[in-house]
Length: 129
Image 1 (cartoon, rainbow, N blue to C red):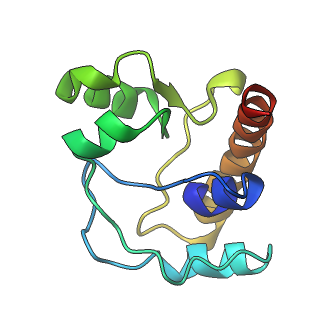
Image 2 (image 1 turned 90 degrees about the vertical axis):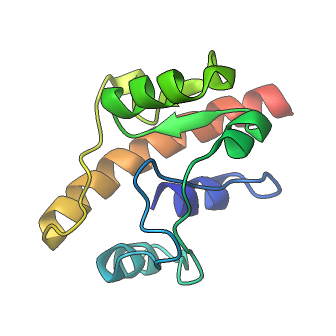
Image 3 (image 1 turned 60 degrees about the vertical axis):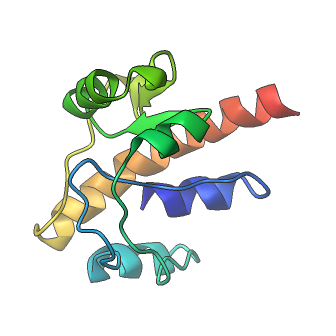
């Protein structure tokens, strides 16, 4: 959901997503697809991929959902130092993982993701223009 929202907010910028425990090759959850479709964003082509050293090296910014993910990325990939932040860093919130949860959990996570994506997109647009 974060990739879809960030890509929509930052046209012309390369945006991707990867997970620490990704179900490689799997599509986005149907509930996530439905919620984003309601916002005019199609993530039907998304396929999960695992975060790896190469992705960390080429990324200018790595956004994670919670403090534990931030710690794990920084420990596994030293090259990520200084470019790993939580999506909701500015509101000091962690985004709960809605995997295998009901729609209400997806909606709550999406609400947090929307706020974080909006804040990051504004900051990125300011520094890249």
